[in-house]
Image (cartoon, rainbow, N blue to C red; front, side, top):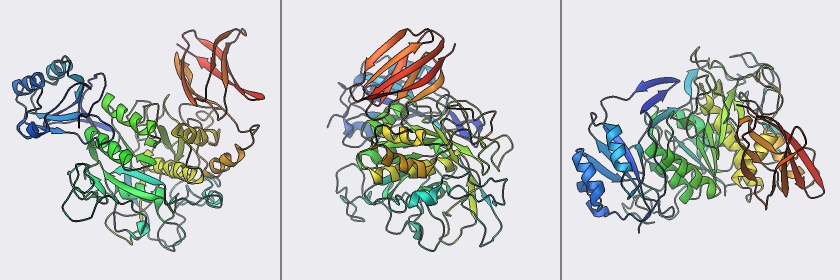
Length: 544
């Protein structure tokens, strides 16, 4: 089969982000990803000898003393061809990328950047009665930090509405999962097209015995956690509830798909994440949790994210922990739900317990915030150790992914844009620091701290077309020329009117829920949306 892909190139410095610090990668091979033009045809059987079947690519590769070449896993459905090439550590990447991107057979060539997780582990005294899961139900007595009763996501009321559906699958793309933990008993996704342990690729997807998922770090079929981060994250989303042990995850019934894209040092190449996304989508994931990120933009990673969302998969990503408004990826891609972290008093986490200079990132791309500091969870080395806790936007993100999976359990036909809109529209605004958490969307809290109960109640209320909480969301707001509008279901027509009352833009929506607009003139605008027999209005500020 001829796999294809279409992209444009970009090059940025290769860095490793770990716990908010930037470290230059050294003493490692230079790794380059090449996305091929749709018309380009490679010869797979020659890859082990550094041959692609494309003479122009081979010429550049051998001139620069290529060490190895592999075909990146993109599944059978996406029809994309991405190559991963490795060169010596002293290779001039500027020249190399320039030469590859000049070839007509290459749609895009870029460095295989690295990123990391966004959470750090800690410990607490061994007290069996310690009220640990403050993010689910905060009574104001949490001992590790100042807390305010009600600074939580109202999970207990949410469970009265929905507890999850085994037909919904959440992919945890992370450092792996402790597969034998009793909290995941009967909950792990398995590849029903594969016969475990027979040494064959039964489903012909290029991966042998991928029964429990895949480890893209070590290229094997064992996505077991060797760091602890992934097990903690998976437990926040999906630890079985009401079972007399451990903790309660947000979703008690969804399936957990384990994909390993982070190594034991909390680092991962973008190529591992890209392959993990394609695997998850093509194997039926409904939600992908990515508690990870890197500071380098990537067209190929963005294309994988868009592939997931276009296929109806909700992607939830952490904002990272550098206490800055620097962009990290994939959180900065517009199709995802980008999640920041709050403390037990509903303020933005700054700092996390593990570093005085850390803090929940913010910026124009943030969607919402959720509890993310002092988050107790499952241990990757023990089935009975419940004393460890983590802190980071990594821990806030799986809580939101769990809410997304509950929303899909309640109504599987919901699109990623609708899930994002519901989570944003039902978040609690102005509950945090009044200097940051201002009315409406702001760059510190996004649309606010998530509320699971209100999100699940929103679905019910939307049966009434005149529901008071029917809203449209504009982001970023304020905007610099380009902005997007998440329209509520049933939106038919939109007008954008300036402060003088002049209609500067008008459009029939034809059922679209997410639209991008450009306004070059600074000032205040009103966005007027028609929904059948009524209208809703929201404000937009365009700045320099």
